[in-house]
Image 1: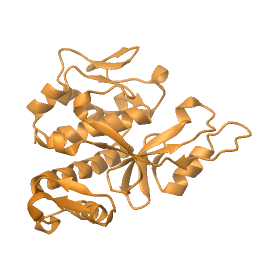
Image 2: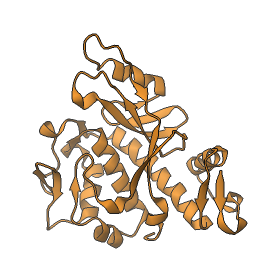
Image 3: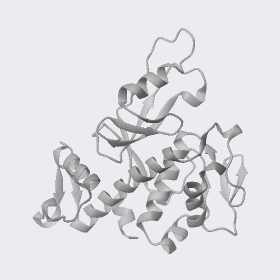
Length: 239
């Protein structure tokens, strides 16, 4: 449910997009309490979640490939490959480098954790002032769980099915470690985006991962009961 300080209601929100309306419905119907200081803070989260969905679809439609780190590549105009990930060149702005990943996607190859981080960076860039983005995320190192603390990524127990949430499909009997699971953006009811597999239903995601298990595997893939989100209220300060 949505709880706003001073007794305000989400009914005070106007001119919502269809995606934002779906997010509000999901928040309202959830048994979890989602608390906001004002309507502006709630609207910011709605728009940010919508950007997650838009940018996930953009990545799906783009030409970025799926690869483990040793076979990965980023546009060398912006990035230098290090043992820990891709470091932004000192002469380049974080905002320009993140935009390039989505406008020049064929120059990139990465795995699913990195895809989520990149979707988050692009969505934050879409939502806050460019000058703030460049201050917050400089210097910038990208790969897997190497990301800037100012992003405010957190993981909780439970699955609430709020559009824009990030969920993890675990594949315990994987063959290749790169397929030990799939990080996915929940787009809408029974629709998920995972880099490397595309947009799928829950059952299709499970089926895809089950084909990537080791010989004589006994444990099927499953949706882990956890959710990853950003600290929206912290980022709202920079809008």
